Structure formats: structure tokens, C-alpha cells
Amino acid sequence: MDQTTRASPRPPRLSARRAAFASGRLERLSPAGEATRAGLLRAAAEIFAEKGYAEASIDDVARRLGATKGLVYHHYRSKGDLYLDAAAWGLAYLDRAVSEAAAPRERAATRLKRMAEAHLAALAAEPAARHGRRGPPPMALARDAGAEAERLAALRQAYEARFHAMLEAARREGDAEAKPDAATACRALLAILDLPARGPPAEPAALALAALRAAGIDRAVLAEEFS
Image 1: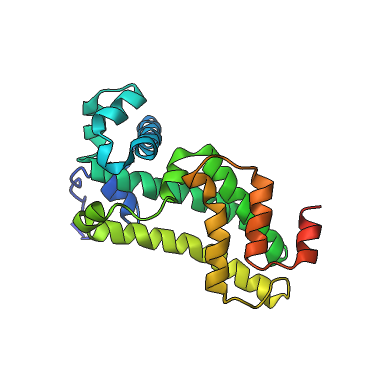
Image 2: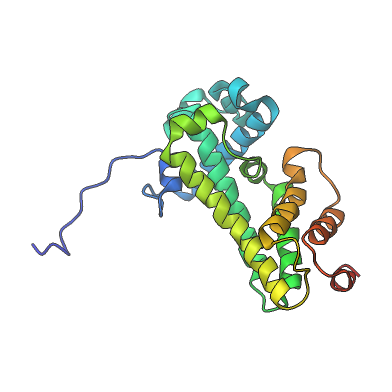
């Protein structure tokens, strides 16, 4: 039999967390399985936000989900796996929302505003998105997770690079100040946009305006965008 037509052996079952970090999911879940996993990750994100990583437990997640601990362990081998996949899933959720917002062919400042609004809407709607934007994993988990923690950091950097690139485009179009450097301005923008991930909800339009001001978007442009 030709190598290109030989049936491949069925791959071993992998945890959902491993698959989420791969370039493509190695284990295809049914729609019902995906819905279960999404609910599990949302419950985990809420528990980690309320208790912190050290105090949270698989039992807590199962109770929040209204399921058995065995269901959680069916998908994840450990609390660390669950923490990392919840963050990765949340970042992917944000990335989809922001990518769609940036797609229309408009001036860069307008697209950056739409990206900021999409980011804030995603944080409001999805606990895992807030979890993904709370910062790097705890030091002990990052040390133990090794490559998985590095991949999560890469996902976060790639997401932030979208905002950096759009801000630079706005500068090239003359709609944003040239100082400070784009990296510093982008950090200021994201620090404001991420406030709902770390504290109580705030009015989205006010946060978006404050973030774009911090990034150096021209005041006349902001007046047009927020009129």
C-alpha cells in the first residue's frame, strides 16, 4: 500500500490542554464535548479569579459547573493544566473578537477603536477572557509547566502585537503622536483596556476613550470617533 494512502493509527487521547497549545487540536471533540469543555473553562476561570491559583481546587470547579470531579479529570490531568488551558482559550476568544473588529478597511485609528471596544466586550462576556488577561501564570506553575507556559506567553504576545501594529499604522497615517515609542504607548493602552480583568466593571466607552488617549491618538480624531 502506498504511504500516502495507508491508514494512520489512531493517535493516543490527549488532554484538552495539550491540544489547545498545539498548532491544531489533536483530539476532535463533538459539539457537545466542546460545549462541556467551554463550560468547564468558564467555571475554572471564575474560581481562579475568586480564590487564586493556590487556593482553588478541582472540587471547586466541579461544584461551580454542577458536575462530578471525574468529569473535570476526564479532560484535564491537573489544576495546572486547567489553569493554562482556560487562559489559552480565553486569549483565543479575544483574538477572534479583535480580529473581526479590525477587518473592515477603515483608517487605522478607527480600527484601533473597534479593537478596543471588542476587547472590552469580550472581557465583559467571557470569564476565560478575563482570566487570560490577568497576567502570566503563578511562578511555581510557570516553572513546572515549562514549554506550555512559554506557549501561553507567546499567545499573549501575539495578541498584543495586533494592537501594536494598528497603533503604528495610525502613527503612519498621522493620527497618533510619535512619542513615546509605540511599545510604551501600546502598554499604556492595554493596561487601561485590561482593567475589567482585574477589578470591577467600568463603562466601556469611557475606558476605550481613556485607552486611546493614553496611546496618543490625536484629540481631533478622538472627537470624531466618540461624537
